[in-house]
Length: 194
Image (cartoon, rainbow, N blue to C red; front, side):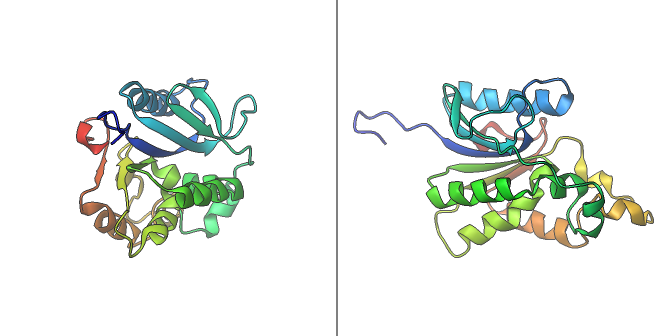
């Protein structure tokens, strides 16, 4: 708490697919709106996502309480995800720039919460858990589901497996997020999550 008695703002690391601007589809509208809401509520948000519009200066302050980290990496190919245990969209976002910036932000620390904004950020969960393994200062982990992502995997459809979470991963993810953390979509994510 600052010396003048005021509480410090909540510090949130927000992992997302990409810069939501311009907001021309549901995912970008949803992600951008959530980020804006946290910032408007007084939270300090640092967003890590792929740059996709005009080149943004990494680490530049774009709005009062939001710092954007937008590597200009080219997403991995569709075909590469066939050999990955990650869902296609998560595999595409696990670029060297995303991994490097995430490692720097985790090392800097001081987060009150880390938001995994959709399945595209699934690649980062093991990295975050490894970073905080055995430590008592792990922030809350918040998973925001965009489209009932568990239903993406259809039994008996092997080609869909590469687009889904590897067998057993979903159970481990639930177990890891269970204690004091939050997962859900817009109807289930409590305000207390942040």
